[in-house]
Every structure is written in structure tokens, then in C-alpha cells.
Image 1 (cartoon, helix red, strand yellow):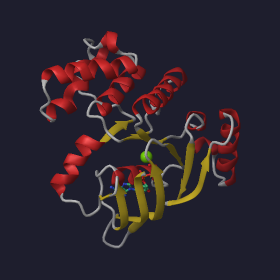
Image 2 (cartoon, helix red, strand yellow; image 1 turned 135 degrees about the vertical axis):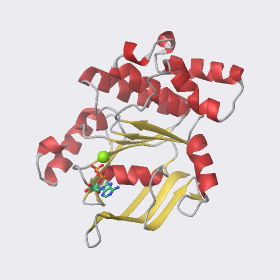
Image 3 (cartoon, helix red, strand yellow; image 1 turned 90 degrees about the vertical axis):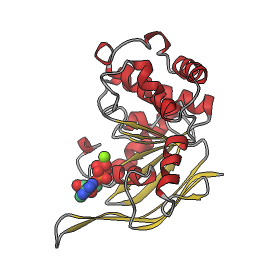
Image 4 (spheres, protein in one colour; image 1 turned 45 degrees about the horizontal axis):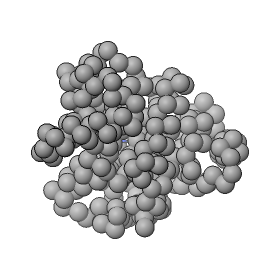
Length: 253
Ligand code: ADP
Ligand code: MG
């Protein structure tokens, strides 16, 4: 069973009357239920555009996206909104938490929007925050917690409505190496415990090596798709080798 089936996805942005940029040039990708996939590629290669189309934030020009077998591209606006709230969890580099709310209120927000019972919201918050190791700081305000804790709270918020997939766009981009390791570790924990699929954009080869599959995007096309065969260490080396093949400045990753 595939959670995502993407075929010939194309996207062009119009920059001005005579100027446009083709950002996705026929992307094909299948993601199995429960898979963890890291998307890598130079800046401007279309990673965010791809994730935004998959999560319904942006529209494609051509191609098809099946989400659990449902046609996402031709879905009505109201059904898409429902899908986004109930089936997808989004995590961003900037956390996107609401500063005027405490951690618990932030985490509960998607459930409040779904008008869930208080009892259910309380028990779900306990369950998920325990899994992410932040159940003892729920009453804290945003200015009282670290970036790593904020991102763990954002992951909890993404999980409370029990989505099938988490879309994460450079979730460790604002974190130090210790917090990066933590966040990657927790993504693996939720994948194992809840079976949630994860599609994560990252520049960090080390972080990507903790996933089971890495896809490389360049100029709007998938040019490499590799899966972990043996150890994480060997996979890390394989990722570095693939990245070096496409050339360019290694700092871009
Ligand atoms: P990445 O996430 O891989 O860095 P993006 O998907 O953000 O790449 O962007 C790919 C290209 O599309 C870039 O050249 C970017 O400037 C351009 N782009 C992205 N969003 C828009 C937009 N809304 N309007 C015009 N151009 C855009
Ligand atoms: Mg991006």
C-alpha cells in the first residue's frame, strides 16, 4: 500500500509577463505506508515546492498525486482542507508555533479545530508528549524553551490528529547538532511506534542517513533514489558519494 503515488508532476512559476521558471519537471515518486524518506538537493532544486504541492499548500500544473489512493490534485477545496487537517502533519524549519500560547495549547490546537472532546485532547497530548519526551514542560511558554524542544512540540502538534504522514521541510535547519540528533531520533521513534510515514527535506547528510531512503532532487527532477542496505555508516558514505556526483559546492547541502 502506497501512502503517496506521484506521477509526472510539473510546476512552473511565472516571474513576470515574459519570464517563468520551471521548478518541477516531471517528478515520479512512490512512498509506501510507514516509509521514512529524506529529500535532498541543492537550494532552488524544488524541494519545498514539491512538499507544498503534496501537502496541498500549492497547486501543481500537470501530473497526478494519489494520497492513500485519493486524487489530491482534483480534490474539492473542502475535502482537501479536511485531508490536510486529519491525514497530514506539517513541520517547518521555523517551528511555526504561536508565541502567545504555551506548549500544551499549541499542541492541542489541531484537536481544538477538530472540536474533539477535552478528555480525548488531554489523553492524546499526554500520549504524544511522553513519546517525544516533553510531557514535563507542557505549561512552559515559548520563550522558556529551547529550539529543540520547540521542534519536538511542533512534531507533537503535527501528530495529535493521527496523520498518515508527516511532511517536514528542513525541520533541523535551525537546530544545533545535538538537537538535530534528538529530532531525527524522535522521528524514528514515532515511525516505529505509530507507523507514521515521514517525508523530510534536509541539507544534512548525517541526518538523512538515519532514514531508510534518500531521494536527490536536482533542477526539478529526481536524479537519485537510494535505500539503506546495511549499516547507517555505509549509508552515510553512499549519500556523500551520490551528492558529490552531482557536483557543485558541497556547502549547499
Ligand atoms: P528548494 O526548497 O529546493 O530550495 P524551492 O522549491 O523553494 O527550492 O524553489 C525552487 C525554485 O522556484 C527557486 O528558484 C525559487 O526561487 C522558485 N520559487 C519558489 N516559489 C516561488 C514562487 N511562489 N514564485 C516564484 N518563484 C518561486
Ligand atoms: Mg526549501
